[in-house]
Length: 120
Image (cartoon, rainbow, N blue to C red; front, top):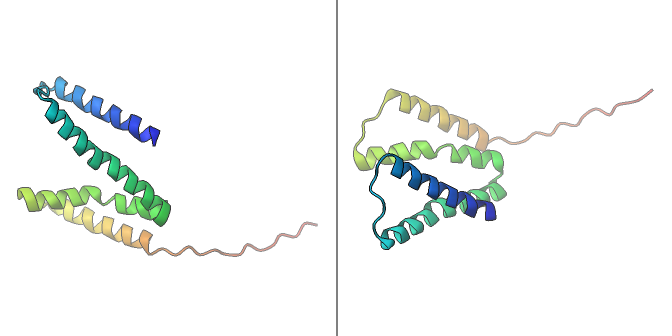
């Protein structure tokens, strides 16, 4: 948990430095900082918590497969909310990712018995 907190502070400070570097207007209100902290808690902190819980209950491979879908979900939301246009590359990539996730999620481990070795 401590690593996540330190990482969160690092991401926040890094984002602020990038904003200053591209000459964004610095935050002028304490209330804006509070809102950003609340947003960061839910966006970063809660997502890390849910990711760790998913790894615990689903396993690393299945969690990673589902987690890999997040860029595609973001693009779908952009299509719906902002009315962005859909490209052929996106459709092909989405189909391949869904197929890969289907394979990983439905994979059942098969344990083969190894033949016993006889030493002479």
